[in-house]
Length: 303
Image (cartoon, rainbow, N blue to C red):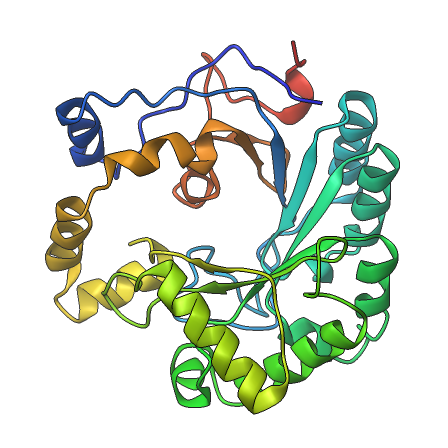
């Protein structure tokens, strides 16, 4: 089911800096919400990792999580309105005690489900059920793997993360993930430090060759993501005197052809308390969708 909502995308820019809006105007680009296809649910900030680049500022010590009452309201909305895609993220979304119920409810409603997975959660004690659960519910896995080399992953995500990630990928492959369209397995790359990602097609070829050669791992696609200057990454930029330089880098590499593909055009981002945002990054910047007052998912009805 494709849904349309009677509000526009908010301008996406940092407080006090509307350079993005100016770039849109310079290129005659109009950023306006289209029909909503994807409902992205952020179920909380708790994670089994504390990565330096994390725009969510997620960590094992975070306590902000989806409650039972909010989970019930989300499930009721999904059951009633049947979004085309339900994209579940966090933190590590699988840590939420409501993860399984959200997946099952969404699948029962006919929605395609995506799990934004950090891979290492599959290797944590108490999560032995997770790989088979993902297979049985035909969940698409989009997994973070910032590099195919152990040293670079360790620099960004900590010692031992690469090895656990490789084992997790091998487990998913053994269950059939990554070989076709029924059980998609995609990887996500983001740069280490204040640089832009390499060409996606070229980097995907490098990933596929290296992971197949060294570990027998296969996957469907690689997505390259530019680090957003918020949360821990912003702290690093400021502490290293790179803040202004990185913002200049982003502004100077604005790509007008990418505007039509921005997630905020067809994705509705929902916080762990049910509040609505144009995108996950605005959620982390506490820039909610507003219509004279804060909006929650259960306040809106598709048309």
